Length: 426
Ligand code: LRH
Ligand code: MN
Ligand code: MN
Image 1 (cartoon, helix red, strand yellow):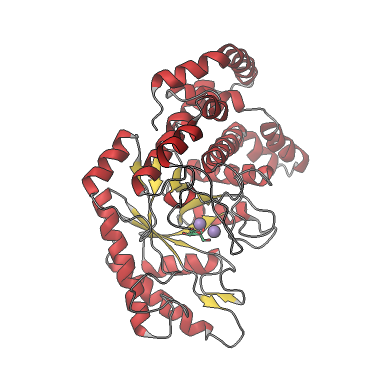
Image 2 (cartoon, helix red, strand yellow; image 1 turned 60 degrees about the horizontal axis):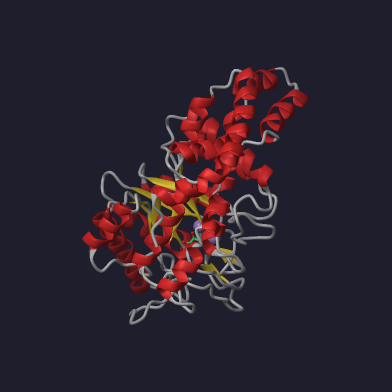
């Protein structure tokens, strides 16, 4: 299934006039506020988010999985699915692979297919949270932190192999997320576990190419429910500093305890030049992996406000790697990803509307009310016509969900792949 220019033009035609009216109206009102609309549209067009290879099939919980029709069952099909999303949204120009779920057989063919779909390979993700078939050592009691050397060595070797795979694809970063931790008090010696993790990460880091980055992801709990070795941004930051300048912290929105001030974490990391990557999702309770912006859109906006501030004022921080890390139990995964991309762009656009100079002045004057007004004025602006215009500028769909449905994409996928498919991975 491939969506071409003519497909997009045919669906855009139906909504073009309505879009033009809405865009003109918004552009005029932004113009009156001295906002450069062309610049805004081009900043939105440039913003690209990676799709992980494990998000294209229906997710599941430990209680079960309800598969979705026409899911991809090979890496090739996963790349094609991201291609579909990208051709509609023009926002998903990269794919992030999980190893060993998605080891390419023929690297040249995979690279060609990605290029045909206008995609690049983002961070490669290692997996030491599951035992692989025929693995000599088990990760039941930890990987990089394990009390025993052989599983630690196996986990280190796996990460180095993931880098080798990524090198062949043109990736430039490795994401390490560890499930390591303990389920019961007394099970682990915290200091030993942390020390082993630091030493193991340093070994991996030694094998990182000059132009690569290593992202260290944190998470407070799950799958371990008493302690997690890399539980929070502080631990990740400490480990990244111990490894060196190519190591960074990765923030996953779902990996915080309820009500954590994530925007402040983002801000601190950017000030210190250590925010490397970002995983988008949303949650009500924990690591729910819900559609981005579906539960707490204002929080997402506040986070983007700090990201925009950091991207403008913190040259010490590299441009972060963006990825969606969500799961879909009851929705069409492709529709869900399109909704997530829209929510990300919406929060970004609103953050770009914040008048940073006036905000700074309000802060200097301790004018708390004005500061809130400035943020909320931006947040309350309906920016959807800007997003549509940014997509249009790159040849995308004005309304991607409507286009996906009217082009009957899922039906074509089912015809190609069959009704009952099993997605590999999670
Ligand atoms: C952990 C996580 C991490 C993994 C992915 C499968 O909860 O968010 O990023 O790589 O899930
Ligand atoms: Mn994640
Ligand atoms: Mn997660």
